[in-house]
Length: 83
Image 1 (cartoon, rainbow, N blue to C red):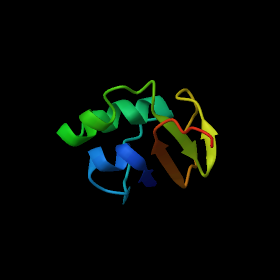
Image 2 (cartoon, helix red, strand yellow):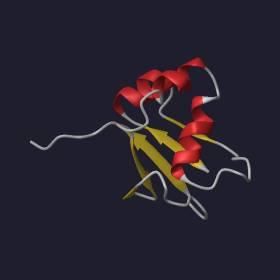
Image 3 (cartoon, one colour):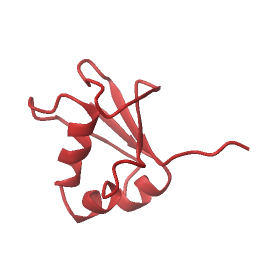
């Protein structure tokens, strides 16, 4: 699965994207964020306040409880403002 990171999430993780094989027990976006936060200091910093992180599965905005089955890519980004 491809993970994409944008804005300050990317800066904190230290990379724009990565291909990753997820453990079978990771079933939702929220579980994925929890798992990522445990991958190291940079991920813990990026996902320390999961309530403000937004996610998209295959370019569609989703909530943390959304299942990730069959997703090709998941993107994480901070809240955006209009303008």
